[in-house]
Amino acid sequence: MCGLCGMFGVAEHWTDQSGAESQRRRIERQHRVRIANAVLEPFGLRCADWQNRFTLASRTGKSVVVDHLGALWPAAEKLAGRPIDPLDPAVIAKVEALVEAR
Amino acid sequence: MIREHRPVTVNLLTGFLGSGKTSLLKRLLCQPSLEDTAVLINEFGEVGLDHLLIEEVDQDVVLLKSGCVCCTVRGDLRDGLDRLFGRMLRGEVPRFSRVVIETTGLADPVPIVASFSADPALRYHFQLGNVVTVIDAVNGMANLARHPEALKQVALADRLVVSKTDLVGPEEVAALCRRLAALNPTAAIHRSSEDEPAPASLLLDDVHDPARKGEEVRRWLAAAEREALHDDHRHHHDDSIATFCLSTDEPLDWAPFGLWLSMLLNRHGSEILRLKGLLWVEGVDRPVVVQGVQHLVHKPVHLDAWPDGKPVTRLVVIGRGLDRAAILRSFRAFNRLGRSAAGAAYSAATAD
Image 1: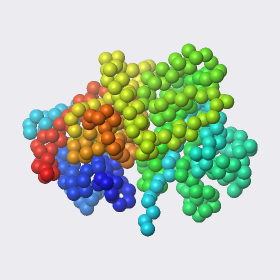
Image 2: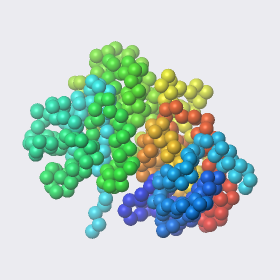
Image 3: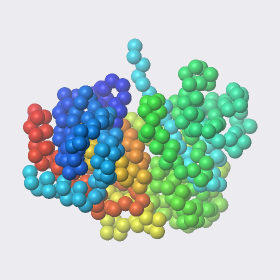
Image 4: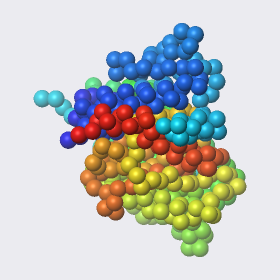
């Protein structure tokens, strides 16, 4: 039985259900937060893992708590006051630059 | 003992006005294997259930000879589902394991799908099964040319039923099937006529069925293969519905993939009509099957083995007005991000 099938209840969002072994799940969430922050940084936002949920904060101190990644992006757009589009050439270029720099 | 939670499967039966949805529904309800089905329709009169009727529970609910529960929706569909489910729990209607929702001909099925995405209670009690779209062989081609709703209904489908095939020549049926396969290469096409029984497998065989999911995924992979072959001749129709495949032969890092796809669906979910595929996820020894309808992504399921014996990632996307080049570039960039320093930290932390 994999981690996905062994979970109690129903996880809220599909991104929490990769099927990774349970002991890896926490590390996976931290990994996710690290990558989310790479995307969010140009928008002046920072995300953190908090009690199985995520907090999202702007540089001006505004913050929200979101349950899962499905809710992260609408909340981030609201805080940033602009769309966060993975097809935006500027966003792609930023991600490509991060890959090249590392 | 803890009882295993089994959500009720919800099938959407959609199709343009006069396409033969009701006729198909009537034929499906006669199938013994669908006897534990409840149907949600707009009006009893439309279905002409008299000959199937066994008992009227109240003005909104009737029981059919087959054991099916038939319920009219008054107002909101979500409330209709909720009420029906409550009645089952209270024992007012027989237990059902499946609900078929017949949409009205002009209905855009998307808001129905969206309600599953938005409502946690609905998501807990119900899971979305096959979307079945009926296209009639007589008017289907013209409807696709004239009505964007008809195109959307085809693009969203898991099963396409070409009805009234006995009323036109085989060439016309074949031409319609080709058009449908180009619009939605991942859906199985079933040809039917009024006097034939409707196979229960249209509803029963889906990706939630452990015995059938392998076969279902193989069809998606075949579609992905065809799309890859026709890469230079994109299926860009006048309507701009296009199908393409995201693929990689390296394991996917789930974190950037999940971030990327959730971000993409947040911004472009209304243009992404269907998403179906098989993923090779790093650290997961079995294939992960993912599928979605617009903003909704179903709970991923596993296959026991790789369909072709070789681990791959193949994700078929059917969408309208999408910038394919940008999606491919973005998908690759995010995937590589997981392999950069952020990914390296993860790999170190999870190393055996």
